[in-house]
Length: 280
Image 1: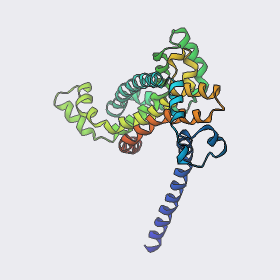
Image 2: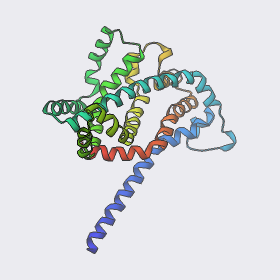
Image 3: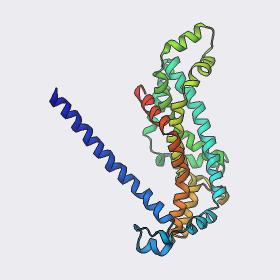
Image 4: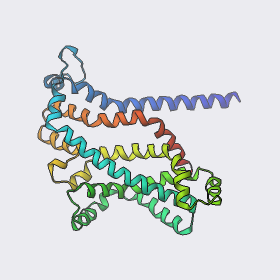
C-alpha cells in the first residue's frame, strides 16, 4: 500500500511539474507582448525583456487602435462570431440530441460520417470551398465567411453535444414522452436547460478559433472594411513590420477579448469538456 501511494504521489508530482513548465512556456509570448506593448520603440529593439517604469507609455496602444480602426474591426469579429456560433449551437445540439436520444441506424451512420470529417484538414478542401462560394455569390460577405466556420466546426460541436447528452439518463426523455411530450418538446423542456456547460465549452473552443482566424478571412474577404481583427493585424504587421511597438500593441488589443471571455467561462469550459468527452 505504501509503495502504491508513493507511486501515485510521484505521478502527481511529475504531472504538476510538466503542467507548470508547459504553462510557463505558453505564458511567455503573452507576457512579452504585454511588456512591450507599453514600451517605446527604441527600448523594444534593444531591451525587449527589461521594464523601465519611467518610460512606459500608451502611445503604442493609441496608435495601433487608430491604425487598425479597432471599433470597426471588433464589430466585424462580433458579427462573424455571433452568427457562426448561433448556427453551430442550434443545429449541433439538435443533431446531438437526435443521435443520443432517437438513436437509429441512419443517425448513427450520419454521426460516424460527421465525426470522420474531423480528420480532414481544412487546407485540402479550401480551394473547392472558395469556388463554391464564388458560384453562390457569397465571397466577400459575412454569411459566406460564417458558413465556412460552421461547416468546418460542426463535427466537433456535434461530438461534444452528443457525448454530453449521452451522459444524461434516458429515463428523463422516456418519462417526458410518456407524459405526452413530442421529441422536439422533450428537447426544449428537458435537455435544453441542461446544456449550459457544454454550450459554454463550444463557445470558448470554437469562439477562440473564429476570433483568431486568419486563413478563412484571407480567402473570403476582399473589402478592407470587412476585415476581421487578426486579418487587420496581419496586414498591419506586413506594412509596419519594423514598428514593433505597434505590432505588440495590436497583438494585445486582439487577444484581450478572448482572454476576458475565457476568464469568465473557464468553469463551464472545464465541466463541458469532461462531460462532453466521457461518452462521445
